[in-house]
Image 1 (spheres, rainbow, N blue to C red):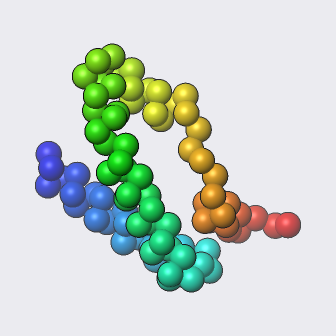
Image 2 (cartoon, helix red, strand yellow; image 1 turned 135 degrees about the vertical axis):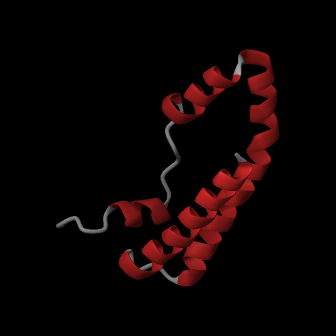
Length: 87
């Protein structure tokens, strides 16, 4: 399963860089900073979320993280979400 996960993650990161630089018009440095901060946040959050999963069950923690807690909005996501919209 880890080969499939690694392949999917690598493909997603590659395509997201192309999308943000070519279609959203962001600078490559901004995209690199945003993806680096996202990776850092994932590394920092992995241990506490793993502990919560051990305590309360992984399904409950997954629902909490993906449904209950809205993702923080940043200028990078605001710009990407506005691509193709007519002002």
